[in-house]
Figure 1 (cartoon, rainbow, N blue to C red):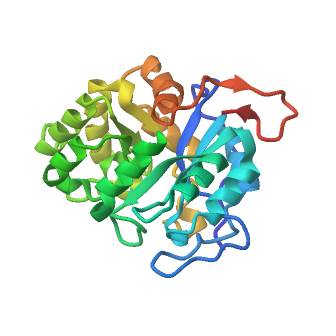
Figure 2 (spheres, helix red, strand yellow; figure 1 turned 90 degrees about the vertical axis):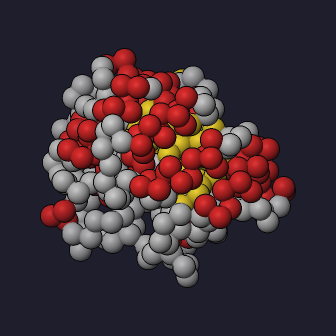
Figure 3 (cartoon, rainbow, N blue to C red; figure 1 turned 90 degrees about the horizontal axis):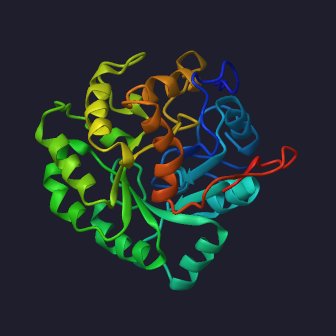
Length: 301
């Protein structure tokens, strides 16, 4: 049975106050996997209690919970997770053009601040709905989290340039075909960042790296160029609970992984931006305000 690492040596240097994990999933009992998506993660259900241990270990104060593919278009688990986590959490849901206005408001009242486009196997809503979901998100003041095979980003560039919402290109762009730091795909990312609506997410580098752990040299080379170009557009996430991992021996050390990924940023100021300031801008979070130590959720968003 998979056993997740939930504690250990904290990252060096420590995370700044108000640090935001912008990419993770959470699962609670009573919400089975639905047809069309993958099954629930291996091992014990990665719930709020487990994730709070990760927050304490890494020094995370705030979190964005993303709807997992296992639950497709049913946001019930996500809403339950937001209620369980309390004031430190916000969510990214799955919606489409048929989602009623009243449902959008219900989601917003529950803490939803964004919508997800996942154009890879198992995703609930793909690029075919990009413009429709963008319009709905913009009407709510939400952001978009967009994920697809970034090797085709040049083909999608006109549509991405036209997005109305703030949005983030997920998971280091997921350039499955392999790209050069000076290639046309990186030029396309730079053009998107120049619109001041797009962000680039450092999370889940192992999902697209061909060189692999511990350094992920191929993803790192591209990430360094993008971070140096626009440090004010980078956000970071754990990608917890690392759903692709099926065996304890393969499970990453989240502190080591965070140190590696955040080490691709040009300096400490860029690191603080990626952990605090940039996610506040992307997800329209207020300035961080710590809660008393005895408060279970640890922080006010």
